[in-house]
Amino acid sequence: MITLTGKTLTLDEVRRVVFGKEKVAIAHDSIHKIKYNRQTVEDLINAKKTMYGINTGFGKFSDVVVAEEDLEELQLNLIHSHACGVGVPFSEEISRTMLLLRANALSRGFSGVRPALIQQLVALVNASIHPVIPEQGSLGASGDLAPLSHLTLALLGEGEVFYNGTRLDASVALAEAGIAPLKLKAKEGLALINGTQAMTAVGVVIYLEVEKLLYQSELIAAMTLEGLQGIIDAFDADLHKVRGHQEQIDVAERIRTILSDSRLITKQGELRVQDAYSLRCIPQVLGASWQTVHYAKEKLLTEINAVTDNPLIFSEDNKVISGGNFHGQPIAFAMDFIKLGIAETANMAERRIERLVNPQLNDLPAFLSPNPGLESGAMIMQYSAASLVSENKTLAHPASVDSIPSSANQEDHVSMGTIAARHALQMLTNTRRVVAIELICAMEAVEFRGIGSMATRTRNFYEKARNIVPSITKDRVFSTDIERLSDWLKDTAVSCVERNYVKGGVFHE
Image (cartoon, rainbow, N blue to C red; front, side, top):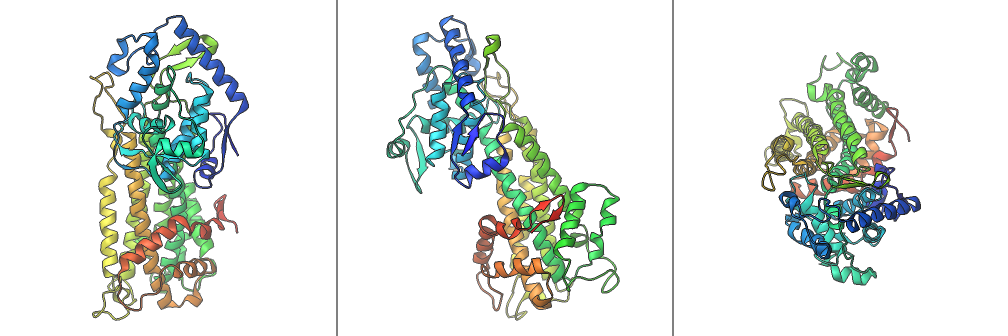
């Protein structure tokens, strides 16, 4: 059971809730603060104090005062009018993460909502009822208004949800789960949609998946080194220590550890003096990719425990402050930065694929074909990898440098952070496919060299991957192989890596 306080949620706890379906509850102490904070809102409404979004309109309508008898309708109108998302829906994992993060943010007790509202969010998480939330439509400032409005519809028994593997009306799912629809009170609609939880949820899922993929990429790169009889001297500890980047030092150490008992790698001067950069510079490039991941992790960890709606209610001082905590710029920058790390992981993997298939660059069968000329082997797999890498380069353009004013220029600078996160997620999928292609080619290469001479760790990974994709004995439809191996890397193969998870830069089995 994960207990929400609004300020102590960890990325590992998010993983356990989102992927492990662990249950969630609100901390007892937080409930007291939430009730106290809500009473402040009620008192200020009774005192006829004008407060943005509580008894006024929204955005450019902030100067329009709304009558007290219309305050609940004001909140419902807000959700209906702002549910303008378009496109395909976010995955259930991302929708589930959004529910969790919004509940956590509201549990801090600065948003002026009732405990019942947060408990409704928690109820949907615990029942695995996931709102259908279109991916497109958020500017990433004033909060992720459109996506969070679709999330809110589900709390009210409106819109659609995913439940028990089916997409259906929210009202039906809530009834089946025994959950009564929520009715919004003053301030509550605005509190639900003023936040960065769409971009942050996507970012958290990306972080968890990128971390896994980078470890896998190191393991697959080590197998490629074996297939190409790479020079291990380039991974010497002293070489990397004198530069000083810890992530680079760690990658080199992990590669050395993986290949410690390999009889396929070489020393400088045995076959050649130096390898190409895509082999020799693995620690420098993947180490830099790790730096982008670590930066994103730091910002995401802050944001999942942040209060990001507007206005905020500070009960101790009896004040309501309108500000801009909903602005997604910190996450927008983090997502644009992690895109660079994702892109370069794919870029370098594709160059290693080329070295594995190009007969002018190795002594392996041309294009790893079992019958070169009659059969093309892995020739077009490299084409696909190149296409995916090129697409990543387009997606890597920073979304955060763009801004289009909205709400009659009242909201005149926005982050586009959700676009940055969505593009990063698409790039991650592309990169996983490129890495899968490298794995297919690397397995063919080590078979040619002799799998009996492989390192213990790469041999173990090879054998598991061979259960997913067989050896190339003749040309076949390789698209199926790429997709199956990519799915395996995403869902199943993590266990092969997590046994060797890193503490202090060293594998621990």
